[in-house]
Structures are given as C-alpha cells and as structure tokens.
Image 1 (cartoon, helix red, strand yellow):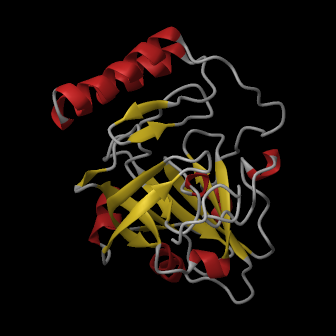
Image 2 (cartoon, helix red, strand yellow):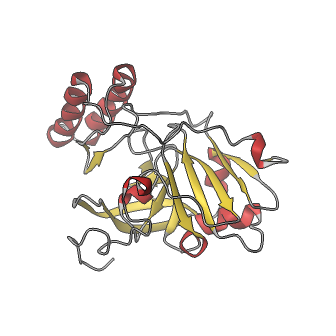
Image 3 (spheres, helix red, strand yellow):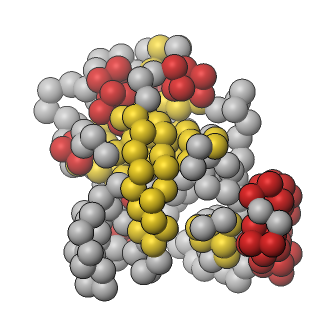
Length: 252
C-alpha cells in the first residue's frame, strides 16, 4: 500500500461532462458484441471470454459509439465513451482520498488482500432488464473508507472511472451499507474489462448506473457531492430499485 500526502497529487482532471453527445456504435463493435453473445450461447463461457477480449480492442480502435447495448454473457454492456476500456492487473491502482486523514493508493493485490465480502444478488438496470443471482466478491466500501480515515462531517463519496468521463456519487450513509462493495470478482471469476474490471463498484440496492465500471477514484466529500454522469442528465440521484422509473416494484 502506498500513502499519498495530498489528494491533489493523484486526482487527474476529468473530461468535462458538458457537450457530451450520443454517437452511433461502430459496425465492427456491433458485429463483435453480437458474436460474443452468440458464442456464449453456442460454445459456452470460454468462447465468450475469448471473444470479449477480442472485442475490447476493436471497440477501442473504432471509438465512435456512445452506448453499447449488446449481450456479453447474461449482461448488456454499456459505455459512454465509445470504447471498452482496460487496464492490466499489474497497472491497476485504486485511489482513496479527499476529505480523509490518510489518502491511500491500492494495487489490485492489496485490494484482494483485504477482508472479502461475498454476496449473491441481482443486477438491475434502470431500463428494465435484470440479471438474477449474480455472485459478487469484493471489499466493502465502508472498509476502504475506514482505511483512509474519513474525517468528521463528511457528507458523501464521489467515484471516478479510468474511462476519464464517468462519475457517480453516494451519500455517506449509502456508502457505508454492507451491500455496497468494490467488486473484483463476478460469478467466481475476475471482473473482465467489458464488465468494468479489474475492479468496479457494485451497489446492490440501486439501479446499475450507480455501479460505476473501471473504478479508479474514491473521493470523500466534505459537502454533499455533485451529481454523477447520469444524474446531471436527469436520472434519479438516489436510484433505489423500484422507485426511479415506476416499472419495477419487486423488493430488493
């Protein structure tokens, strides 16, 4: 574990959220994603995993899409930048800072060495689709906050993705729930790049847009944090399942 003297030393400038517009997904990305989903059905998970690794660099070269809505395994994959991002396990770093006593930077190995939390819970998208009984493994967000030492009076937490664009927020009470984790495994396997690995946030009781992918920044805020990427575009800030879009009243 590396400690850092000031949060400003490692919080990179994020690209502005203003003026972000949707663009069509490139043809190669469409074909690749369709192939990935089909391979998972016909040949099983190994073929799907292989195609998933192939599709990511194709999407990166194409770089024209706003959202990808194609199946990888049981999930649909979304990206707001027109590409699927990746970072090796060796190069991955998770920065925890802001209004804390001791900002820290964790490698993936250091994250995995912390006490693990395992749960089996659904993943629910605000658009209506749901993946049942997903097995998650990770570290409670509360444990990471305690490791950095949240200062008295902190109001919330802001999260950043290494895609350079996506952000999310939680109140401090929400962030300290037992069912909010930084996940590094899904379904008994490492979280893949397409699913937001090496580590992503998983907020069990909220819609999927809260579970930010490609997580690399956790910033504690002295004041109530600014709305995240989708909230500034009209989505509910407190995205409790069943209360945001009126279409899903099943209990969490």
